[in-house]
Length: 298
Image (cartoon, rainbow, N blue to C red; front, side):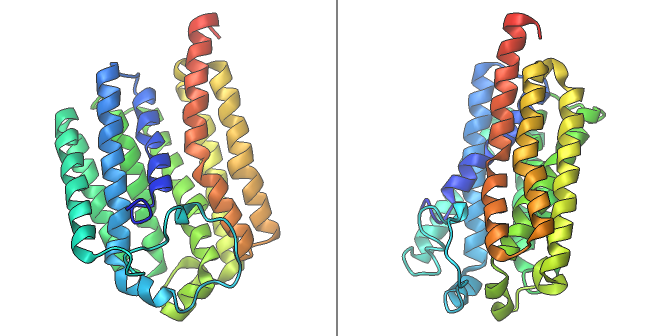
């Protein structure tokens, strides 16, 4: 079940709406817990939906596995257990339905906007999977999907849509997802995808162009993170700002430069693993910055 929902990646993703909640001004502990629980259920369900819809493709994938070995944060647990026959279809469907129901009920307790965002994100994930062999531009859907998921935390606190911080937050998440997770993950799996007829950016446009595009979006994410942090300086404080810049340098800028020098699958996988930890690091620095600001005023 953990591997089916890509549990490590799903758990790390919960940092995104929690950061959105902080950016909106924070909330009482009860609401924070509610957002966290709803997010856990939603992310575990949505990641599992990906494997359910891609069941047939993933079965074929095991006939053409990539040649190199390397740690893949997405494969913690069991990689595609449904496709491997280690999980039955009825159990998989029940798991998704149960998690989805929990997510919707908890989201409804927060705000109707959160329900809309969760449902829209799930539909975008389904559309992304259905477009696997159709177009490489489906990568844009993942950026929108991740941005909407993160914005659940914002709208758990406020309905304001005219705040520059909100739009910088959404841009930051979308660019990070496209450059730091989606394209580089496809670049790591490019040999498998060629055999499967899956149309990804690396398959259609090649490794070099994919590396350039990923690097560019990573740099956009870094610039957006600095603007977002400066716009919410009372939330982050000076320590949070410094930590966010440091985290961006390590998880975004340095990997972008590495991809410009080498865009081989092994390098892409390393970039993917590092970038996956980035939102959690930013959330941690935001919390440290808040604590330091409360104690020292800086």
